[in-house]
Length: 311
Length: 259
Image 1 (cartoon, rainbow over the protein chains, first blue to last red):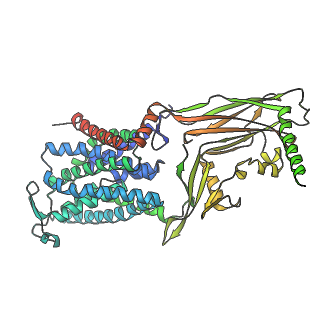
Image 2 (cartoon, rainbow over the protein chains, first blue to last red):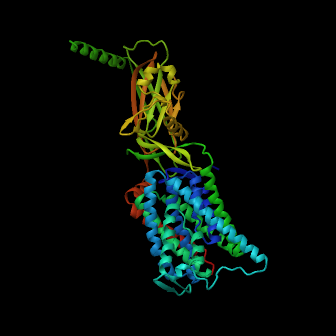
Image 3 (spheres, rainbow over the protein chains, first blue to last red):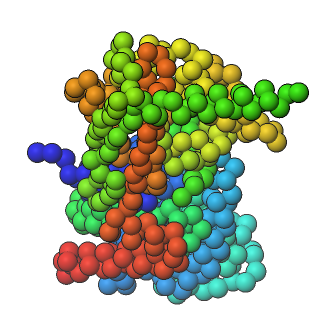
């Protein structure tokens, strides 16, 4: 059987439809299992396939919007999300996305976009993955010794609990200043637009550790934020850089939402701390992969990029 | 007293250029003048065919004819970057901009160009990838540099590796002493736009006739619609894509609903 090739109109290259579809399912499975968007895996995979980093980042944002919407609906049915907290995060999230897309456009013109994407992956995934692995190993050792796994340490206040503009979020049963909430939203939107990730793997721990959001609402809430920032990023990337490939996006999102369903079922059978350790290893591995590429002597010192074409 | 000499010179050049035209003529065509990029496009080949027309004025030739076909795609400006190690990591450092160079360039001939005509003729006519003018932007000026410039070599090497530049010294074949054919390979990544085919006929190491043709590569149907929409109606395109994402997500949650 000949592989079925599809010509991508924006990426300007033909790809095997089954390979892309399988990638969508595989990443969808992982995203469903861990309750994340999976952008940090999908973007590197697309780059590996030969799609330019810029098109990959822009297109993956729509793929994440689809998978997080399907996830958010599920959590909405279970009433497992905090809409008022999500709305507060979104104020920062949308501003952050706009700032991220602007910087993306600027770096692209400067010729340093690919390096920035690689460096961001190394720094962010390396550090977050490392922390997650360390935390996961500690949690497993603790449970081996028969001690209960502590996630939420009640009563321990950090410095930003003294900040003004305090708001009460009923669903999450927390009373915190809106400044760190908006700031977290901004950071997520910003790095999401530049790196092509929803940032669920980053947002969930941030909400748990910094804002003390209870675990039962944290994933649903993070999905609402991811959904809106990634949908916004899709529109903004389309308007400014014209780099969103709708055909590629469609193949990915159909595979992604299907894989996510099976992943979610597989994830429910596993223990939380083991799941977090696995996710940490995965995040760390992607970060290391980018680091190796940056440090190893490249096969080709030269690269070529088109600036303008006479039509 | 230079004028009569100049006129004589001009007349001589006129005779020199007009003379071959009377001797032989190139007649050629392509299997298609329009290449359509459809969703299943994975590259294609165009067939160039033609004949050498002789008339009563044609002098008998000692050797056989040679053809050099140069196919060049729409011009584009490119930047070639070189990675260098900076604080342990490899990052783009130095760069050169190539201005208005062919995005696609294929040199097809009956024999290696060096065997067809003397080097100075080849150089003047810009025959062959190595002898094609590739102007770089150097400060405020644009100029071509020495031929073993590392950036120029890297540019050619990268273009060749993407099959966008083609060097095929045996691609033109004579089926009869006057009838020839060649196939022009167009990769999937060949940019859309107008392509020119320039034909040169050589005999006894001299250029005796020229011919030409053209074709275009266009995005067709759905591909054209999508690419056009993305470029010209970015906001609508983005909103439609985002809406599509929401629809897919919603459908999935309905289809796979378990409660």
